[in-house]
Length: 106
Image 1 (cartoon, rainbow, N blue to C red):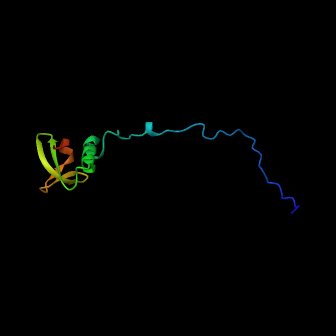
Image 2: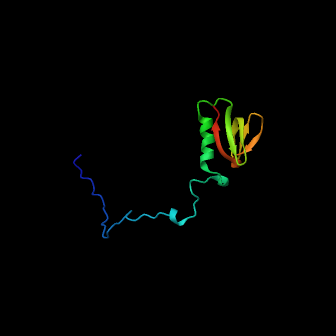
Image 3: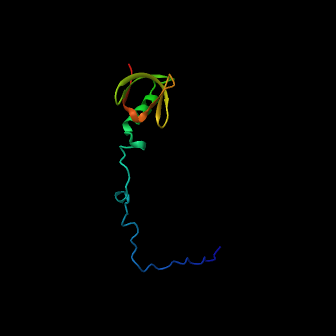
């Protein structure tokens, strides 16, 4: 066990190292849509309101809501939604793009 192990070869570094001193950020150079807009230019807050209604503890199967459309206010019982429409209890599809506001009826 008195044997001497060979030395480790280390290459000499003769130049100055400047790793990670500069960072490139490309978001300013691209045409990314604002976070306030989503697919089909529907405001994010309407989609989020629909999602929070369905995530609430009051939703089990159906939810009584007051939906404000572009031209009128309707009271409907909704049971689901997909990417484009809100589905009512009467199998009626209400396009999300036509909804201005949606609230749970008390």
